[in-house]
Image (cartoon, rainbow, N blue to C red; front, side, top):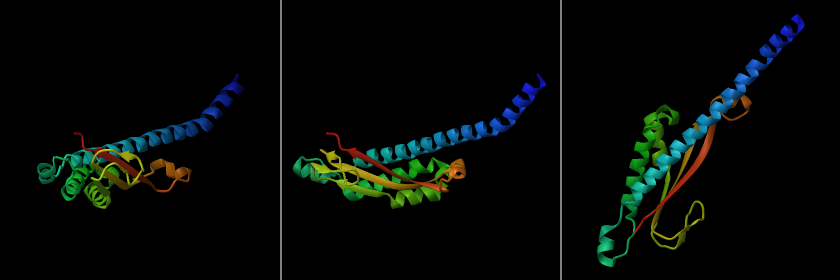
Length: 162
């Protein structure tokens, strides 16, 4: 009986750290995926906000809807910054949010039908396409050979609805 108790203690001593490490990596993977979803949501909200900036003068003259490219991009960058700023230290605080918003690629597509410049999907309405490169800390996954930062290339598109 004492021998079995000794084996149980030995298994516990050997397996408990391994199980804790596996559990912490699973939690870290979930955290990375959740952060990616938050950043993607910020991109989506910025794209939808920018898609609402219609060129009123062009619409009054022609009756056709198109986006005001300059204003749509500035509105999109502003909303992207505001939404990313809420993520705090995970993306580098205000400076990280400003950097991501400043370097994001905004492309306004008014001549339709067209192709999304980032994915190649068909666009049937005037649209704004956004692509952002975001560096995310890999956390505990560094212990398993992952780089310190994971580079995410995220994309969002919003079409004008008539």
